[in-house]
Image (cartoon, rainbow, N blue to C red; front, side, top):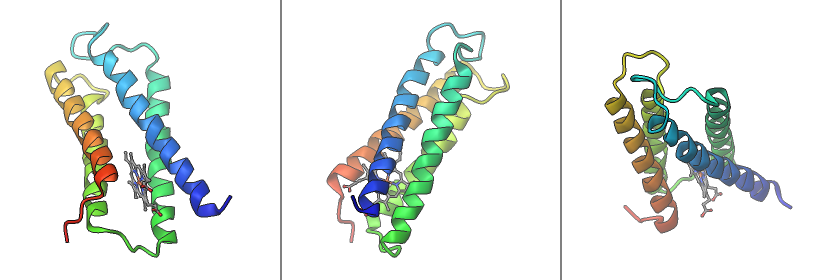
Length: 130
Ligand code: HEM
């Protein structure tokens, strides 16, 4: 199997794990919440899954980009921006201190889910902005 395909498979595995992490962890903002804080059950596992998946996506994404000699289509930049929005909104949704209201956390989750959905639509449609 060639290296490009292998890295692409690892990248897509990371993406699948990220979708799983966002979906499963979302329940901690609805069931067993403690005041404004998410349900603490399995927090470490969720943090590890989410961080691992995002790191894998970013690292393999950069390698893939390098292998393509940074020759990216315009929609790719939208994907990277949406990825940054995803990271930032997840950071807000699950911030460790209780300065965030539950409703703000859920709004963060909503934005994260929207960004992830938009990334998937972009990948499927590969729109031509040019
Ligand atoms: C949650 C975020 C992401 C998801 C779900 C995702 C998913 C995918 C999928 C499914 C493909 C294969 C598409 C195809 O070949 O038709 C792909 C390709 C690619 N991704 Fe991502 N990706 C994400 C984030 C990123 C980031 C942050 C980067 C860059 C740092 C990146 C760089 C790339 C590159 C360069 C390719 C093209 C590989 C090629 O065609 O040679 N991705 N991504």
